[in-house]
Length: 308
Image (cartoon, rainbow, N blue to C red; front, side):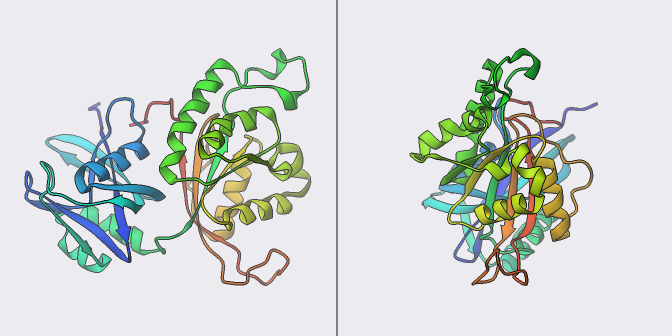
């Protein structure tokens, strides 16, 4: 089997327009994208390629689409995200000699590849400024049978700390501002380093632990939606007995097909993107419009190799 070339890119947006770049090497108009480097995560590659090609530092939003095609006789897959401009200025460079900010319809007419048009169609199907929540399963904590104390106090193993370091490096790509966690030590430790980097505390969420969620699933789901609807981008650390049910239930309520089982390896992340409710929404109002899950994208533990 031929090795698949992995690449990543983004629909970079600001003020209702998206960036399209001209690459003189190919004489084409394209969305910014490029190959994933060895040891690099796909989201990190997307942000790096945007910066290298456009000069703009970007904040990731929802996962959009994966396109597949053959390049120079080899199979290639490109994962695309939505990305908001944070800062920067374009200057012509070795890869890109021109950048245009265009409405989506004009960008779709200009790009050379139909695959880029596919990505722009997905981007245009929802507002760009969705609410993003990063749902993390705690990292490895050793075997329960080997821990003699209270299971709530079981800490991360050495492998778990390495996974937590990967999560700590990965999640800033979405510019999180709040950190929440189920009360168990291993859940808190998984995101403690990120919280320290952000200069915030870890807010404990009893309803998002296994023992707090299952006696009242509806209350747990409501709490997660409350967190998602707050200001900024929250991170929530929880457990394998909670996350698959949360993701599957929210997807079902929103009519979002997931296409099979909900994976949830230790140290992995679900990027959940919601369309915010109408103004005046309240969880006490049963007739209110709930935040609707628009995209649910699974990222394996940052230490894992990408799957071809």
